[in-house]
Image 1 (cartoon, rainbow, N blue to C red):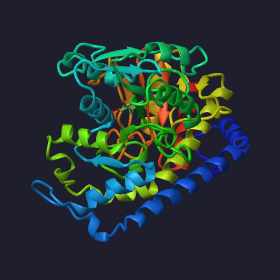
Image 2: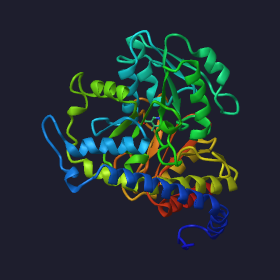
Image 3: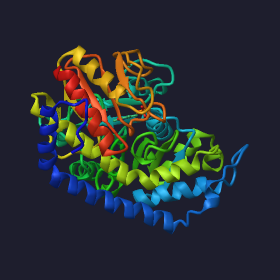
Image 4: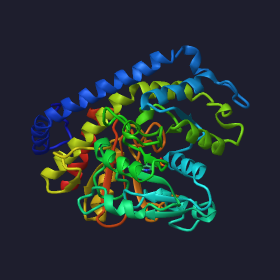
Length: 415
Ligand SMILES: *Cc1c(COP(=O)(O)O)cnc(C)c1O
């Protein structure tokens, strides 16, 4: 191991030991990256991606061939009928709200079966009052909590479905809740149960941070629709903006009509020069996600060693790239985020502070010294300023970068 001049020998020696212990895990992650790389490459070849596909249109954006082809590539990868991949989808929350508001009509009910959804959706749904929330449009919701062991409560799900239920929603990643993220095999049983209650129930998965973590995706185990952000996994660190939705063609059409206008749908919306980065980022994403996943395991191994509770633990499976560390202390959470920021390529000299981010209930502190502003497939850490003062660490486009940042943060906290 490289002898970082600013990391103590004690920490470096433990790091060597932990890397040895994680060797099998890293090998498995390499295998997954390799399989996903082939899947992505096959889609590019199948759709005959060409240099001309990187050209941009203007105005209405009719017949933008590269955009149309990129959406085909996404649906090939996710094995879906169609996909919407757009720079106009501004972030993950937007992709999720877009999907929900496109499909649900007044009188419909939305059923969350993985507990409370991610903070940034509270206003979208109307858990917190807001103009334009689903609730304001007469769409109700129910939340089925996970069981104590963080598995799906199948009996409660059965009881919660009624004649109004239209979408059954699973959040794959933990969000700001300290629970494990789901692997596809764990979601499969719940999806099967839902479909057996009523085959016309639409299963939607918030796939944020989950893409390419496994060899299969939620759409391979029966989900009708998935959505996510291009400044997370599938953008591979290069996509400068955007979100995607992939799934059943009739649902994607509704989403496209909602994004633009009925009748226009996918036909309009120029990509304004973002296509090449979206393609190239997608080509790198399987490897980049693998690197981020190794960083998550390494974080867990190192912080556990010094007595911090990490979720998932270093010997537990990871359903997404996020690693949560409980600091039980606001100052340690701040120090962690400050140090991650200081180990970034961009804005290393600035100190992040907790602030009232749009869409979040508590103040959030966020380290993101990223080339793409706010990108969390790049090295990043964040956490709401509330007990147990958990830092959510994710990303690192290369393992080596993430590793150094983790060692540095650990050293700062131990000091
Ligand atoms: C990141 C994330 C989102 C979307 O957040 P944006 O910041 O709007 O992209 C939604 N759900 C989960 C679980 C997430 O991790």
